[in-house]
Length: 474
Image (cartoon, rainbow, N blue to C red; front, side, top):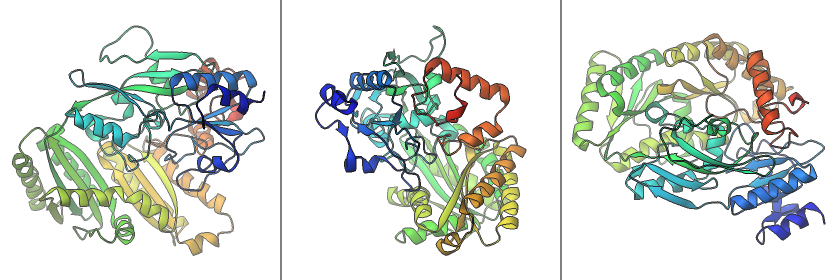
């Protein structure tokens, strides 16, 4: 019996896709990365996943785990090599297993969509704080496997800091049950951290215990215009001093990026006229009037000090939603306006203005006709720096691959010079595996190779992702 037939006999009806039925699973969200697969599997339970992994291991077939396919570095998209892998999509594993509001935890399947988990938490008067533009389609297993960041890292940390326990199917098909909802547990190695950010290369996350927080009862949200990024940094320092942990959001965007969003979604207008824009939000359990007065006082002092040009505080939920629509509209706008070469950079918060200055100058010197679009989680030092070409200019490039490498090199060299990272929240995937090898400390890279060898000795788990396939230790 061939492998598809074998798995069809083990799994629920319709859980094995072949031929044209696989097409939706063979490319990323941008439509730029495509690959091939033997077939696609759609398990419904952890035991189904284990059965698939065991069968593939016995047959010597590689597996590419797949979440919502919203990643930007190709971790969930199969390569185009001579031996197509089996795709294992977790999209049918969507159960909310348990909510413990008093403990502040929620147990979920890895295929749960992030927005569904957020809604389940709110129904229990709690908050799951990881929030990103793709939250309506990305899946919990995917955000764990990439250690996703988003717009709330300033206050709540990355996904890693909001995971208490995991359930993982290992490369031989064994199931590791680490679904503990504990804040303190020193019983040996913290194995969950091996799988958070591993992008499916060490095992397949099938379940998670996530940390919940108190649900804020009030928000104060403002859209602020500033003349330059140094003044934005000064405002951040002011707000942290006067508002403390109530400051949950401090997002920076340049005028070019904002114009792209408005052109793509003309129903939403710009609240301010400035070279740089900030989305700022406070949240806590206070009365709304208290937060608004606190934010108004801070922005008033900043205005008097010449740090800001203009500020609009949201007067109701609709206006707040409109501000957030401008921020969350960047991804769709960038996908539809020109050809964007994006970078996901992290530098110390204090170095964000310097990075923007040096990177912008280097890009304009090399590619004077390109447009620079910036959106930054400035409060945590993450900069999404995009170099955009018109479709006409891009189609006329003699060496588009060389241009992409040149842009990436400029960005990453500027980040390195400031003690930064070439990937902040998007992970490595297949796209940046060479970059990881080139820019890693040798001892660190060899340690990753050894770890991969211990967990996945036959190299069947998402080969070519994170570590280059030919770097697998023999």
